[in-house]
Length: 410
Image (tube, rainbow, N blue to C red; front, side, top):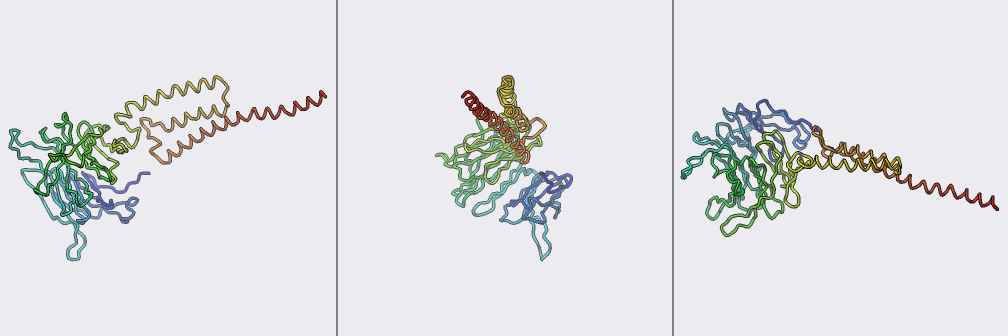
């Protein structure tokens, strides 16, 4: 059963959980950063959260909050509507209570920060921030970006060089495709090693990107959201002679009625959560072949919505015809016939209608549906058992009668 864990202030524009899930930071229209804590951190999943700190970080609204990696303490980066970026750290000075103090601020009148993400290398903390200005020597002038998205490759080992994927939603088709950048330690520079876009899609604006954690896969997985849906890309680990990584589009996910604003992978890299302008949060599960499918198989997607309802409707006609001829023949046991009719109750209960929810998604409802199926099987089996025992009872009744007739004839 759903339970409210925290009530955010009116005017909240963004929020972000820390890495342990014990703290929640929220930004508001008036430039206030609020931090919520659970009274019992070890039981945060069932405890309510209360606001413990408030600090003004800007005169304009906060549009994004990102927690720094936990090994660097309790600190957050805030991007505001005026394009400024500030990093705030919770510290205690001179034995005073913990307070949020600014430790870094980036603001430039000629450019605006659009996105920020933190990645950890074996040497230092690395920050990638993208500004709404790009100096270009070409005749295209200076393109402007409406939004940007960046996602670091989760580091698996100390030997792995840091890399990230970036994408823009800009007025220049040359910038909009997602590109993977990898750090070249030998020359101390970043190199573009892959581009995640088909030839016909390279000019499409990109709304969000997310790099999946890798646990034992021989390739990396990156999700890219454009106006055509969410693309799942496989990125090879072995570069070619030119230093480029092989890429392959493994799946295309559709279902959001509008732009996709944000995507996040779970810790295993097997489940992707996405949300967008349609106000929906969708979950996508990875299978063993690398494909993706909705967690709810009856969720409205391009695959299930188009054929599932038609297949269900068509399958009812043969079954109803089977019941008609079975009833007309009058040869089936009554209890068995009742069981076949009772099966319709199970089918109706487990079918997702437009205003309902699938019983397979709710534990107690799923158990009720399974109980209906068990009753159906019980009725059918008992009816058949009763019908099979009738000839045996008739034979047992005929045997004494035959013996009496033989005695009387003697």
